[in-house]
Image (cartoon, one colour):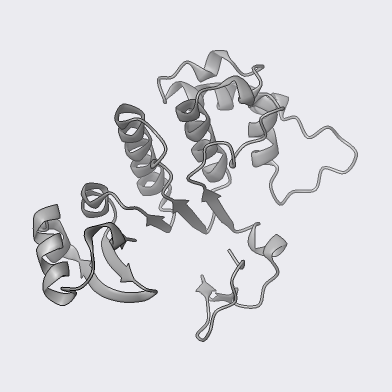
Length: 211
């Protein structure tokens, strides 16, 4: 996202060098869903206003209000796929929604413009298991359908193994494990922990996180 300058190396997305690009320019190409459901949306604005704002990301709309009334049916159809009834609450302020509803909305907003890179920062960690599963499945559907390159940080070993095509485990800022293909698909949380402990016998379980 550009909040921390790299010690070395370069960041390229589709052959474009993002290493020195200012944050506001990066944001036109990179979307993020935060761990805290309150961070990805504007609580004092309605669902419709939030979706319009996300839809207009990187676009010029001069002195207009930026409300995409012609896209209202598209927003309603998109929200209906979540099964949370949000399609009937387009004029409801987002601050009145539950954490799970808000996080689902944040995911839709982050992917409306099909970003070149989607960052998921433990985006289900603050949710109940049922809502977490819903969001993970919706994330999988969107990412695979629109082929959006995605980086997900998670402490949930089951999710780290189940989703995505590559699993990288970090400790103290260094890559200690890297699995892809069948090697990744054949993992279980128990196998992963065993491999981890064989490599790092002094590291405690609560220091583990995967990416």
